Amino acid sequence: MFYNARWYDPSLGRMAQADTIVPGGVQGLDRNAYVNNSPLNYVDPTGHRGCTPGEKSYACLIRARLLKEKEKKPPTILILVCGDKTGENCETGYGPYDGDQPLSDYEEWADANGIQVEYFGFGEGETIGDVQARIEEFMEKTENAGANFILVGHSAGADAAWNAAYSQAEKGNTSRIRGVLLLDAGAMEIERDDMNFLIGELINRYGIDVKSFSSGDYRGWDDDGKGTSITLPSNTISIPVQSHYALAVDNIVLDQYTSPILNGWISGH
Image (cartoon, rainbow, N blue to C red; front, side, top):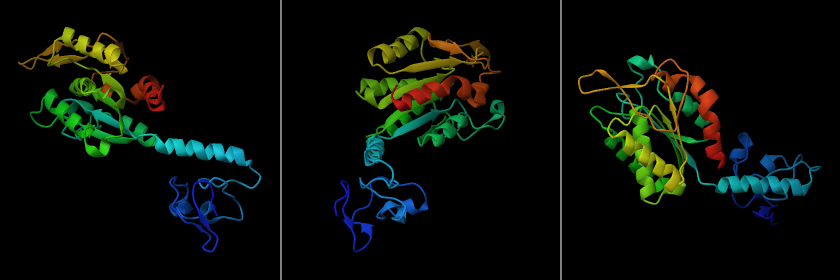
């Protein structure tokens, strides 16, 4: 018996092919089962989703098609890039972070939205260019060929993030980048005018959405270890948090400022 998407074998009481959509619940793990092994309670006019007998088959069909379309969409990967001295995989919440892992709130947001997360940080002696290269290597892996990316970077990690996005745009991979979120991007290895020009190119020439936020008190360090003012992208919005480091760990940043942006990027708006 053909059920639009799969054949049903009545002698076995099972579908002949595994469902391409994994239903919810424990029974859903058996992808050859008919209506989650509950044929007395449900029917399946589409081969993809169980419906109650009283439910109009047209409505059931529409929902099944929406699930199928969602399955076809390429995955989105959230790339989190932490600042200096945070370790290659952003594992170190040193000193000013008070032991909190930088950007971990974004991992929780990603988990809630079913999005894969990949961390990048600064290993011993690494430069912005080194981290940028690792990010691009990951983005260009064969297994990530069909994925879309959102990049979120803090401090020097923000500079690595937008530089990676710019390089990918130049390689023709513009459509794969949903957006770039910068938290206290610092232009520590590039002149301010050059930074603003290149970020402007990302936005205006390549059509990539770039949002920039600042803690309002961001200071970098010169070669003598003394505090020095840092230039920020010209489209930066200031957020009232206590410090540069708080911008990466204070949940008010995600809850009140950046989550609407991220939600828009994953929905395609």
